[in-house]
Image (cartoon, rainbow, N blue to C red):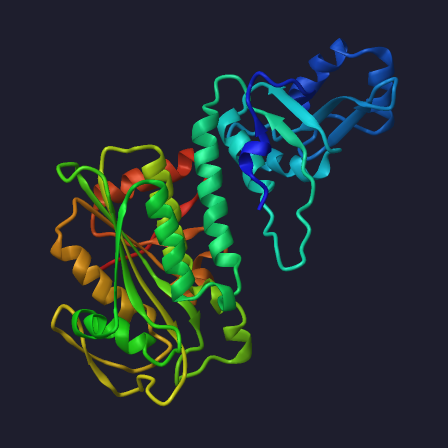
Amino acid sequence: MTASSSVLLAGKSTGVNLHLLDEKSWSSFKRQLATATLAWADAHGFRGMAGQVLVVPGTKGNVERVLAGVSCDADRDPFAVGKLCKTLPPGTYAVSGDGVDFRLLALGWCLEAYAFGGYGKKIPTVAKLVCPSGVDRTDVLRCAEATAFVRDLVNAPASDMGPDELEQAARTLAKAHRATLSVTKGKALEKNFPMVHAVGRASSREPRLIDLSWGRLQAPRVTLVGKGVCFDTGGLDIKPASGMLLMKKDMGGAANVLGLAQMIMGAKLPVRLRVLIPAVENAISGNAFRPGDVLRSRKGLSVEIGNTDAEGRLVLADALALADEDAPDLLIDMATLTGAARVALGPDIAPFYTDDDDAAKELMEAAEREIDPVWRMPFWK
């Protein structure tokens, strides 16, 4: 991946002026331009329309300045400017303009600069941005680097991201932030987390429960649970080839809670953090769990298997039972649990469920501020 710190430069750096404006401000702004620059803009039909970009050349063939059109709407999307990191000529740019959330713009620039490297892929060169005045560069980099960490985990092929590698990623994260980490597998897993064991036992890659803890014991307790199905064949109720193609992403919940943990620990938030990840591969072999099997859960309830492709709720049930035993103040579970959510809301909006109206309200308000939409789904008793 491209290191965000090399894309978002410290504020003391200098760069080519990248000025953001809309159609309303263009009429007054163009009066400030030199005659040659205004003629260049007219020749290219630049009027400050959203999406328009004008690169103004200097006398020596260099880039003198860049004008970029943004939406006139009050709720304009600052992330949209981020794509310029890949379309502008390589170099360093300093952004200016009115009515723009520069923190989200800087974050969007870093996120857009992400590329998954390795496997013969060349990381493309991107334009760099000087961190805008008043923006906390450390905070932006913390968010961007955690997101890149999540993307790297999800993008890695399952051959290189099984339960072992997912555990190693958690160990590396724990070591970096002086967190404690324990792993349950083998007979101990079968005894204490029987459904995690049942789902993962058919794979040659041993299933496990990863448990990370960080922060003061007396602080408010926040527990994150992430579905870590590193690959999902569907089990004996096997998926069709088209449905199995992207199943390396079925550990996306685990990746996201690790990324969120990285942000929490990096910001040194005053919480007692716990991260639980049931890491398995839902494979097929002679000892795979079967439709009609009745499994015992950690909670003590028995579960009859109707379809072995509904493995996520099984491993999460055991992990959530453990999380609940600790009675955390806030419990968040993330999972790629069902494609029906994507059918309902599309690829850009994350659905969520909660029985806490206050928490739902806070989450949706935060999502609106961050232009990262979520949608509450019904969760009837």
